[in-house]
Length: 179
Image (cartoon, rainbow, N blue to C red; front, side, top):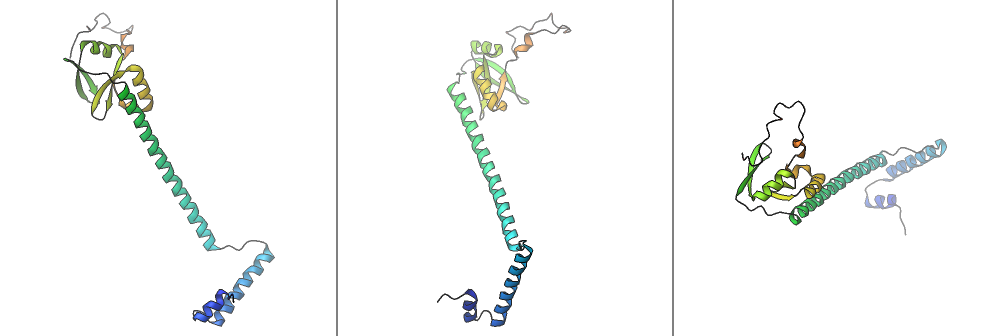
């Protein structure tokens, strides 16, 4: 009852007996050559299939890497957000504190005690979205490890050291100077 594919195609009228014999002879000839030469016969369709499979695997690997990178960036942003939200210091006051954000001068209103903490490096200004938030400097250092672009203002404590060749070393800037 089990008819071969060739028999089924003959019954359907898709091929004739002459064509079926020709295909069978070609197949037998290939097998004979393969046995004698002990080298596999190159099948182009198999090569194309393997190449397509390799290309698909490489493409899938790239997509997975991009997906993993996106997830890592999202997790990093969530960590930074949590650090900022859990360590925010309220910046309510009547005294202006000016700082540079890129090429623009921005200001926040803080108390005089917060100004002192900012100038001594105890507090740091970080940016979250379009808001400027005060956080303790150790927290800002942890944020800077994850994303240095979030740190907007951090007091440079090395400025207190005086160069030997500085012609203005004798002229100290007062702490209460507001600009």
